[in-house]
Length: 178
Length: 178
Image 1 (cartoon, each protein chain N blue to C red):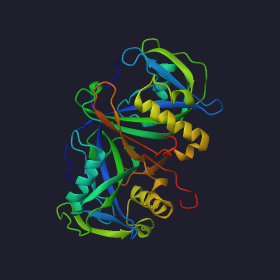
Image 2 (cartoon, rainbow over the protein chains, first blue to last red):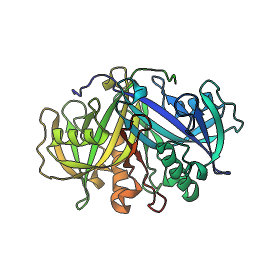
Image 3 (spheres, helix red, strand yellow):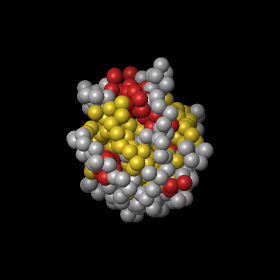
Image 4 (spheres, helix red, strand yellow):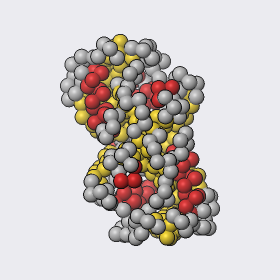
């Protein structure tokens, strides 16, 4: 099998949208450097060998002090010639997380502020990025109609050659079909 | 913003599941080398700077001779230490495509066979890989209940800094909410 290119072309960035279902709030930060007045989901780059969900949980904790657990994959963005990616392409994945703690203790080196913000406000404010706004709309829809409407759930499947397992994300099948 | 690592960690592989809605058949191949007796979706690695959907359509054409168009993103798999990835991690994305032509003219260097196979058969046969089987089940569900149940649709959004556009994939929102 010859499937050029035989080199890595993408960095993987992951953001975590930590949604508190009982209050309809989501954890957002304002970056220190780039997007001072824009609410965003905390996140960052995957370390080599690190799974998507692990990156999301780790970055959320490092930036905000909030412990959380992975629930689903919500969105994938592919961007080429991205200024932060130094000539590589960037695959940016947004996950839905569920909070395990609630007391914010944010990283003052990375962020100027961090809040639990109402999803309804995030979905309508101008003080955010287009992608954050769209995912906030998606999350609001999920909060009202059920997150199964918006989630890609994860399952582990066996790799054919290595005997290892990998993570596959897709829409959940009705249990009657599995 | 300092988000190490400042190097690419992943290669992006893309497969195309070309589904003919009127017959319930999907285009599958058997690889020459690796998985001789396993039906799989045609696919391969993204070229640098190439969008997911473009890779899927290109690889399907190169392997099978079938022209198709991108419809949606179905599934994302992340795999580390993958034997074909030479120490990199592998992000493997399966797209749903719609056929524009139907006459198979497959690449004999890459494949030993290529067929339009009934989705129902692909979903139940043992002659396939676990991931192909699972996506066949997902596609069968979509064929019967509507592809909106399984699709992540693509939209283009403006990048904040560069003024360029990027592709964002997520579950489609009801039009009343957008």
